[in-house]
Figure 1 (cartoon, rainbow, N blue to C red):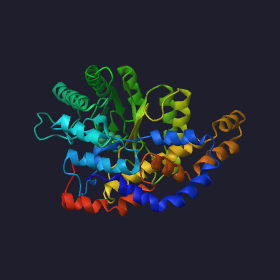
Figure 2 (spheres, rainbow, N blue to C red):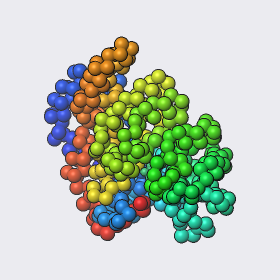
Figure 3 (cartoon, rainbow, N blue to C red):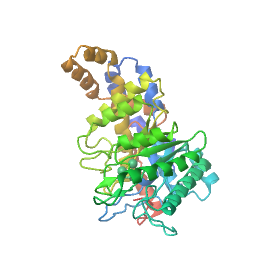
Figure 4 (cartoon, rainbow, N blue to C red):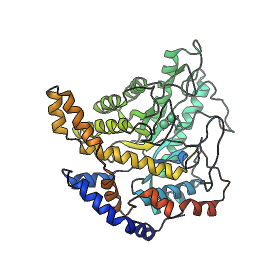
Length: 424
Ligand code: RM4
Ligand code: MN
Ligand code: MN
């Protein structure tokens, strides 16, 4: 299904008066208001194809109604999200969950919906039905060269699908690791991974990048071969300029200072991008900003400052993606909330008085530095985001509009109650 623009406009109309009052109130205190609004207008976050269905846990999966049954329907769902928030103009595909049978037709549908294809993700953490060798003991790090070759070939195939669709990056996440001490030779596993990635790297088209994701544990519980940003950074450095580190917010042990990691990777030109989500304990893949919005703001504060120092384009020089998977919410509502949370953190970071903060840092004025950061964090920037959305033809309040326009009911009517999207 596709949302009609007039329906969104009509819904906006009812909220407009209130919006204008709120907007004027916050805008009065924003220096360089036009710049802030135009940055918000340009900002987009990719939607992961695997988040459009209800996620499962290892205990079960409770599918919701009207889930997308095909790649086409996944694109349509992202089209709905983008029509509402005007900030989700791309989709990140996972192969083989989302193999495009007819790349030209899929590309045409995406263009019609105003979408393009973000990074493509390979999958060597599951065995596929027709596969010769098993990944039970790993893929790119495997002790057996034949298994490594199979995983390398899969990644090269994923690049080929991506090229057909106009993607520009391959995102690699490996579950490779060990469950028990003694199971692995760490150096051997690292070297095998490096050599495998080198073969994949060699297959990248000129204008492509490879993003190396890390994760401390799960599904392996003793060691993960790319377990932290240091190991990912080391691989990316050895691979070359097309390789960099992808930060998934849920892939850190509790208490890790993620904003500091982000700052250093950015300084070194090795920050590929993000998989946004939130977590309380581990890789919980909860809605972005639902648990720790302050951390998200602190990350964006480092991003804005670090990107400005390097003269980077906020909207396009880093890969912004969501990686979440839910079992209780309507996936579209969840994604709308995630995008909104990211834009809130970004807008707040844009409001930080950088000069004043720098001066406070130079003077070791710790209390003032905190005041400056929190003044931005405690600003209700939602009217700024609503204004940017309105100017782009989106909804003032995307979730509210989604509900009022009964989108899920229409999807259920069209697709049925018992649908299961591919994914986890
Ligand atoms: C992993 C990791 C990857 C994602 C898979 C589905 O934990 O976050 O990025 O592709 O889950
Ligand atoms: Mn991820
Ligand atoms: Mn994850």
